[in-house]
Image (tube, rainbow, N blue to C red):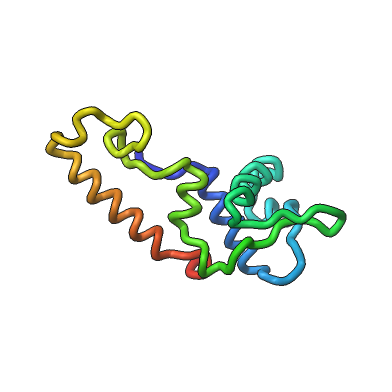
Length: 132
């Protein structure tokens, strides 16, 4: 079964929630986690990765929390998937690190490249703004 991880799913849900509340004040992690039905600890780990990539901003202090790092229309689902999954490769021959040795001559490799390009294209043209 081919599917994205829960980490990516929760990242997208969390970004949706931030975009829905897109005000000036940061949103507390506890509130986002409750709405998304995920543990605060897991969501904190996810948002830390997204913050390192500039997708969200972390705000410290009593009124701290998280806000979007960019406008929702500037955050693509492809970017989120690549941050959370560490890249995108449908199978071994498409990996950037340690790819299959036969990828250049294999008859099925082009099918995988085409499928991956279609998936990447769909994720690239879909933004957080599109899903709120």
